Amino acid sequence: MQEDLTYTHQYEPSTGEQGNTTLLLLHGTGGDENALSDLGRMILPDAGQLRPRGNVSENGMSRFFRRFAEGVLDVEDLKSRTGDLATFIQQASVRYGFDAQQVIGAGFSNGANIASSMLLLYPQVLHIAILLHPMLAFVPDPLPDLRGKPVFIGAGRSDPLVPSEQTEQLADLLKRAGAQVNVFWHNGGHTVSVEEVKAIKNWLSGLV
Image 1 (cartoon, one colour):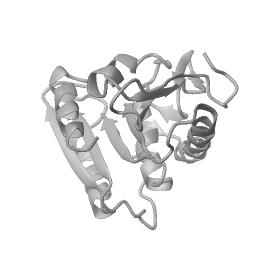
Image 2 (cartoon, one colour):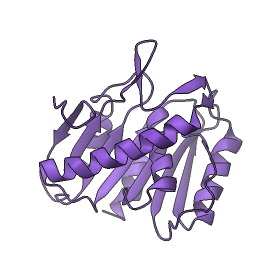
Image 3 (tube, one colour):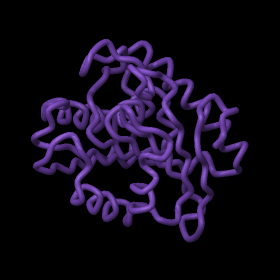
Image 4 (cartoon, helix red, strand yellow):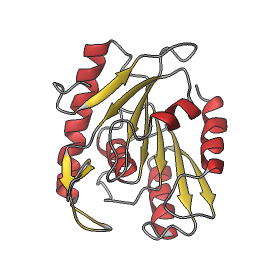
């Protein structure tokens, strides 16, 4: 476990055909740097993995940024920590020697929210983004240039934390910025379904 690049994290190099690709895996509230490792192996088994642990503690649970209450995000803290994460990714690429132009961000819930913030504030950092059950945290002015950037959004129609309109608003915002957005709905709640994982894998097969 590495602790000297701002974030406690794990890094695993690529092992095969996807040698130029690194998955940035961003856990949800209460997760850690290992929470999404299996998901990463399911969707891109040969890719490298960079897995930071959120450095904000909420009642002992790790997060990537603060919130005032469930569903009420501290947007200024989110923006600040998005910058910190962008710096960490660049520093990690130098440390470990992976291609900073080939980073795929995949986040769940809190991790998806900081990944979507990365798209909006630092669009050059993520080559591809996979946002699982994200919220629309803020609307930047002006919109970033996301022309041609592939984005997958996974959402549950019965998600008690993220209303459907939030998902639709985020997808619309990213499309207006030029991103190529694919929204996948399942009938469950605030969890990643088997169908969702299969859809991500199929979607990535045409991109990586």
